[in-house]
Amino acid sequence: MEYIQVSAPATIGNIGPGFDVLGLAIRHWGDRLEARKTDQGVSIAAVNSTVGGSELSKDPDKNTAGIAAKQTLKLLGIDQGVELVLHKGLPMGSGLGSSAASAVAAAFAVNELYDRPLTKEELILPATLAEEKVSGGFFADNTAPALLGGATLTRSCMPLDVTRIGCIENLIVILVTPDIVVLTREARELLPKTVPMEDFIFNMANTSLITAAFSKNDYSLFARSLNDVVVEPVRSKLIAGFDEVKKNALKAGADGMAISGSGPTVFAITDTPKRARFIEDAMVRTFALHGIRSMSLITEVDPEGARVIETQ
Ligand code: HSE
Image (cartoon, rainbow, N blue to C red):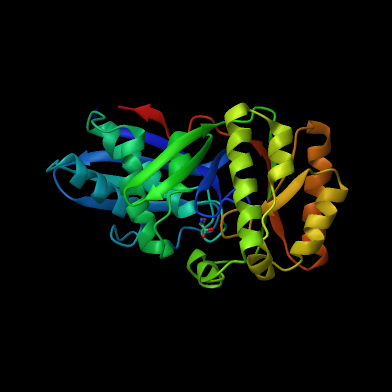
């Protein structure tokens, strides 16, 4: 094989209370990447985008795709190289794991091109090292679900220990991305340094129950557990209109709403297809009342994660 085209999905980091440990892959939005074998080194021939990512660097040391490709080649111990063409389907700074999707697509493509010596689980490390360069933190709650699909849980970063938890088949996710930029690095700097014991217990209980819900394919348990009293109260201040959007999403029938990753994307949940459009409409309109345009999507869990589209 000389050429491969792959895709990696958007992801919802944290899934509410599971800060830096829970992550979820979702369908329909994501990055695509073409990779071709070369004699040596990593180069990025083009970065194409319909969502405002074309200003992304083609310098392989500054783009997570390039960094992940280099890390993967190093891990494989291969003296050959790769040329990449990145098709961004995710805006940067949206809270949908955009930099992780590019990193995952590159790590996955390089491994496939060179006969797949590593498992998807083993590719989490090179992809997460790439993500670390741009986010300022080492966390796998975007890279792991983008690779493995479904929901994942990170027990430890050093050494990296990640478990795929599962899927909730009837979960419908309504994503709304307001036209605001929130940089993960900045959203992490805002976090409290200490947490009251009762808030710690509350978030721990809800995170554990979300894990159980994805293991048991139990929508109702998930809906009851989508609560975060530690990070959401701080980060929601970066998202104009957040409280009202949440209130109106719940009024329109959503069973919960939370920030996706570090924001500004928010996601609401339902298991009733008929309600999804009403919820989406209520959220988009509420942002519009605050003078903010937004992009929205009704979607579901992506159970597969990174995948091959074409080979030559
Ligand atoms: N867990 C990370 C954070 C995800 O919330 O900062 C970033 O998308």
